[in-house]
Structures are given as C-alpha cells and as structure tokens.
Length: 507
Image 1 (cartoon, one colour):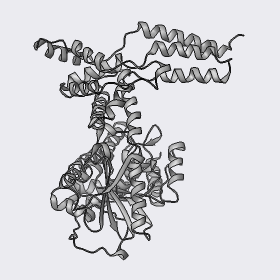
Image 2: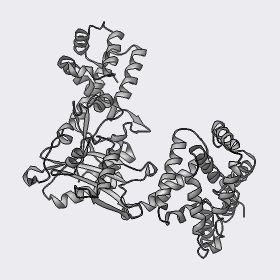
Image 3: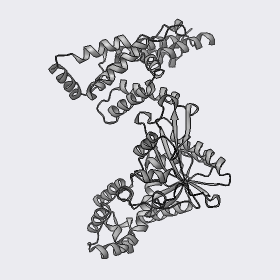
Image 4: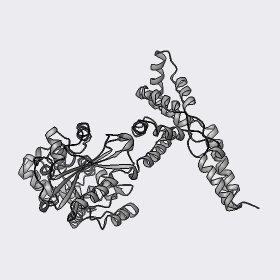
C-alpha cells in the first residue's frame, strides 16, 4: 500500500530534520557570558563546565523506558537536594551556564522523537489501537529528561519555592536577551506548564488580610505593593481597615508567602480619584455603614513572584473576591477597578516625536487648543509648539497652571482613550493593565482626569486613571469577544473620545 503525497512529505521532512539536528551546532549563551564565567573559574583553578556536567549527570536521571514508566522508582531525594544546593551556591552568570547545560543536554531525545514520528506516519493505515499506542509513545518521548527531576523537587520541602525562583532566573535571561537559546525557551515553557498545574486555582487558598494577620505577612503585603507604594505602618493599617479589604492567594507549599495581592475599597459610588482611597482614614474601631457600601473598587493588584509570570492568578483572584464580597454584601452590584495607565506618557512622547518628524502635529489639538497653548507658553506655531508640548509633558510643571491644565485636559483625554483603545500589540491592547482587565471581561468604562496627582502618576500617565467596569452578566461574553475577535467593549464616554481623536487626527 502506497503512502499519500502528504505522508511522504512528512516523512521526508522528519528525516531531513533529524540529519540537521545531528549536524547543526546550537547557539546557547552569548560569548561574553561564557568568557566571563570561564575566566573567573580559571582564576580559581577550576573547570566550571566539568563540575556542572558531573552534578547534572548524577542528579538528572534518564527517563524510564516507556514500558516501565509507571513502575520505575522516583529519583533519589539526595539527587534533588544536591541539585538544589549546588544551584543556590552558583554566581548569577554561572547559574545561567548551568541552566543552559540542563536545558540543552538533558531535554528531549530529539532523535528518538523523530524515529517515533516516522513510525507514526507508517502506522496511518493500521488499526486505531496501534495508532493510539504509537502516539502515546511519541508523546512520552517528547517529555524533556529534566521534567522528572523538576517534578520530584516540587514535592520536597521548599522545592516549589525553589522552582519558582529558578523560573525567574530563566525569564530574566530570556527577556534580557542574555541568551537566545531555543533550549532555554523550551525549559521556560516546561516550567510554566508545570507551575500552572501546581498553582491551579483548586490548590490556592484565598486569605483576607486584616490588622490581626501576622506581622510578617503584613510586612510582605507592604513590600510587594507595586501600584501605590505603602509609606508606613499607618498606611497599611488604613488599607486593611474599615471600608477596605485586602485579599491574597496563598499556597500550602509556600506558607506565609502571598502570591498575588488585591486591594479593594468599599465605596458608595465608583471612585474616580485614587487619593480619596489611599489617604482617607477610618480608625480600626469605625463601624461600617452597610448603606454606604454600594461599590467595590479594585485599586491595586500585585503579583509577588516573578517566576509565576504568565501563570493565571490575578484573574482567578478577582473572580473569587467578587464572590466573597457578594456573600458579605448581597446588595452590592457595582464592581470596578481604578487602574493606572503605566505606559501612556512613554507612548505619548514617542507618538509626538513621530508627528513632529513627519510634520503633521496640527491635528493632535484643535486650532483653538494650539492657540491657547501658544499664548500661555509663548511658543511659535508649528513644530515649536509641538516641541513645547513634549517638554511640558516630560515634567508635571503644567499641573501648577490652571490655564495649562484646562487647555491640556481635552487633548490628553482623547490621546489616552486612543492609546487604550486603538494602540495594539498583536491585535490586543498595548497597555498591559488594559489587556489584563479586558481579558477578564471588563468594560473600558471611564477615563478619569487627574485621578492620580502623585509624582509617579504624573510621570507615567499625566495623572489619568481608568475604571474598568465588571458587569458580571457580561464578563464572559466580553472576554470571549476580546480574546477570540480582539474586540474591546467600551462605554459611550470612551467611544466619544475616540471619535474626537479620529476626527482631529484624520485617522
């Protein structure tokens, strides 16, 4: 029986790929890193590669044969402990070299996988039982050899935390372009998949943080706050006190370590200013008035573990907190974020520079707005006024002028609306905070002028903040529409600003 043309192509491709894999050298860590590590080690009279290879040979055992995979004993605990101890004592550059060796030399058996792929092609005319058996063998052969070691480490005391930190090292090396090794990318992908399983929502505990929580936990909550820095103990007392809620996901294997933290303000209306939330103070003995609590404002969410990047925790935390609040306040119907726009000013500066270079800055502001800006600053019309605008936005000095603030408000609101709604990366919102909430099914509901007048707020977003509104009956539809069709659900206010921007800019 003859194979079809497509099967022959697959077979030819697989054989070619196998020859390429055997012959082609793989680029790993950049030459500078290798030279640095080896130079340091040579000075100490040691060969780092040799020592690392010996440790890996001892600690990363071969995968059991397919036939005995369910009966084979796990790796010796001493091997996993040796691997962990050796890695912890390496310098930063040495860790990278060690991970490269682990990823490259103890990953997938590529030749074995290709052989099984060819065998799978040859079995396509056989019965389904045979095909499924070969597919299962191929699936097993695609498991990196180091997976067994990582899985065993996760079951040791402190092992899961070790792996989270190890992935943080891998992410740092790949994101900083220290290495472009495909083996390291595969190691990262394997670790992410394993951590997603070990940190699935069913294994996480939702914990409410109060002033009675352990001091160490309160201190970590303060240190990990990434959106609105905690200034002192009075500040953290305010954030866990009356009319406030603070929740965190924890994991049994990382006791006392919050993984992702969500701060909530309980208000009468949807807040449009962060200062009213982080500076408003109620004493711990204040009794909450249920009639004044009609909205929950998610004003800060912080992931605490770099090694869990890409593992869905924040989304699940918000969903669990909503259910918790609905249980405590059955009458509550308004759920919204009050979110920063962290990349707005950086994007805006580049946007203005591009318009200045192309000589088409006129449409960004109306003629009246340009005239008022020129009158206040004394700038000449044209490129000089555009450069003046760029200089103004590079600092927060314009905030001290009521006239400038009034002139800039409509233009900056239009530009921010376009940044959130119109600027995309692979079809999704360019702004990371917008992308997070839109994936969760929120509506881009309201853009708030001078909602954060702190130095950080002014420097990153011209003081603008956004309410992403969670209409609970619509979140699933919105999320699907965004993720599958890249459609952003927005309010009339936002769409009106978009329309004004497009009219002015003639986009």
